Amino acid sequence: MKTLIATVAVLCLVTGASSVHAADPPRGDLIELHSCQVYIGGCIASSEFTQEGQYLLRVWHFDGGSYGGSQLGGLQVALLEVADQNLAVKGTRPTESMVYLPESASTAQASALVEWLKASNPELALTKCRVRTMPMEFAQTRDRISFSAGDALRIETMPFAPCGLVSCGESLWYTPRSRLTSYTVGVTSKTVVQEPALTLRWIDHGKNNVFEGRFDGGSTARAGFVQPALICSLADHPRHE
Image (cartoon, rainbow, N blue to C red; front, side):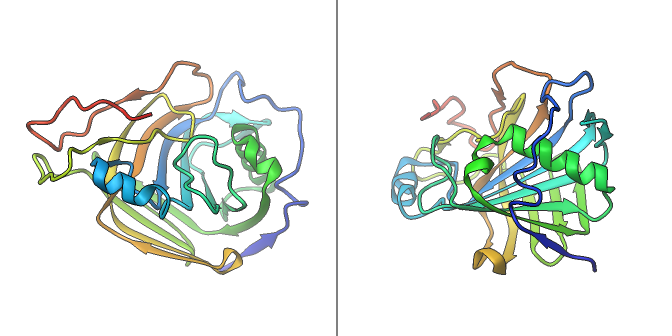
């Protein structure tokens, strides 16, 4: 397996003239995984607010579009960020990050992915950032997503169980950091993140901690939240952010 680790000076701070609003903007699916729960009752949300949420992993799967003259359809890029505060809270900045690029990308596509990621996430310019290249697999069915990147990342999501057990008034406590056209929340059936460069070993399961949505670089509309079908009697809880 070919693995490349590069410093921030090599890729994360590369500049270019490409615009996020291209004629054929990148589009596809996103999973945004937090280390705190994002759709949960107030009692749990309050307990996790200051103690959890310091890790954030996002995976973009492109089903079309281009950037910087490179077609991105069929590729993925992942961004792992760590902080000393809860990254689900708006305005919190990461202290370190790791960008994962697909081994199948050409040199031009890899550069375009980093440029697009940097343009879409300005905080990378102020963050200590590394880059790794490794084989990736992304699979999606109607209600489940799986993603892996070498031996560093493995994620599997599943939907909420209809009419599931509730105990604390579950509702939406956070909104995605990513720009999306629509999103919902899901449950992680498996999370395995092992990144020695960030001294991080994050293993979890069974948490309401993942946003799943669609992104389209050409859209400026506010993202629509699709309520998960999980609680028969509590369908219209308000957001808390």
